[in-house]
Image (cartoon, rainbow over all chains, first blue to last red; front, side, top):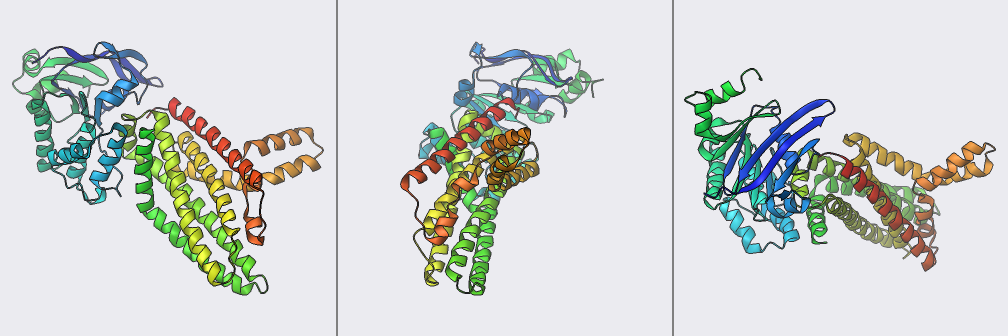
Length: 237
Length: 253
C-alpha cells in the first residue's frame, strides 16, 4: 500500500462564537487508504467534514491536498461527498438526477449506467419511490460521479437497516479494492473495524488518537475497539 | 456555463413536477372560473373584465408559485443537505445562478401555459385581443424580478417563513411604489421627501413594468418602451442576484 499523504489537516480549529467545536485537529490521510473518523455524537465530525469541503470557514489551521493548500477547484474536481441524511430531488428519477448533475462534468451516459449497476439501483424509479437504503446508494453514486480521488462519507450507514448497512459496506469495500482513498465518519465501531486501515478518534472537538486499529488497542490496553474507544473518550462524554 | 445549466435542468424538472406547481395551476383555473363569472356580471364591460381578471389571475397565481416554490425548494435543499452536495460540485455563484434561471424558466413555462389557456377562453368569449400577450410579457418581467428578490431573501434569512413574507411585502411595496413618488410632490417635509424618493428608487417600480392596462384596453406600446422596461428588469435582477451571491458567500453552509 502506498503511504504518500493525499490529504492533511493541520491544526484545524473551528469556533461558533465562543464555542470551540473543532479544537486544533491535525490528521493525515494516505493515498488508497480507508480512514475512519470515529467519535460520539457531538464530537465535531460533521463540522470537520464540512470545513474540509469549505462549507464552513475554519478559524485556524489549513488543509493540504497533494501537498498544496486545498483550493475550491480541488474540491469541485477531485472530492466526492456523501452527507449524512442526504436526499436528492424527490420528483426526479435516480438516472435523471445523475445525468443532470453529470452534465456539468460531461459524464457519459454509459458511466452513469455503470454507476447505477454498481450500486444496484433501478434508475428509472423516482427518488420518492426509493427506500432509505436506495437513497443512500444513490448518494454514493452521486459521490462517485466525478470519479473522485478522495471520497468523503459522513455517517454513510446512519438510519439504515442491517441489509442496507451491509450493501453500503460492500460498496465501500469494493471502492477500497479499486484503490480509492476514503475518509468516512461513523460512531459505529464494528463498521470502522471492518473497513478502515487507519482511524482517528475524536471527542469534544479534539483528536484523541490517529493511527492503526491494533496500535490503538495496544495503547488503550484493550481487547476490543469498543473498550478502547470508551477508555479514550472517558471523562469527555 | 455547463455547471449552471446542470442546476437549471434539475430545478426545472423538479419544479414543474412538484405539487406546488400543480396546486398553483388549480388555483389559476379556479380564478379563471371566477373571471368568467365576473365577466357575466359586468354588463357592457364583459370583455374588459375577462381580460383584466385573467391577467390578474396569472400574476397572482405565479406570485404564489415564486413564493412557495423558490422558498420551499431553497430551504428543502438545505434540510436534505442536497445543497452541500451541489456546493461540492459547483462554485456558489453557479449554484445560485442555476437556481435563479431555473425558477425564471419555470415561471416562464407557467405564464406561457396560463396565457395560452386564458387566451383560448377569451377567444371563445370573443374577448381576445393580441395585446393580451403584451400583458403576459409584463407579468413575466415582473415575476422574474421577484424571483431574484425571493432568492435574495432566501439567502438572507434562516427561516423560510421570513423569506416568503418578505417577498410578499416587497411585492406589495413595489405595487405602491408610485404612491411614494406622489408623496414627494405633495409633502412639505424635506426628510420625508428624501426618504420616499430613496424608497421609490430602491423598491422595484411595478407601475413601470405593468402592462396590464394597455393589454386590457387594447393599446399598443412602442418597441423602445418594451426594451427599456426589459432592460430595467434585467439590471434589477443582476443587482439582486449580486447581493444574493454576496450574502450567500458570507454565510456558512
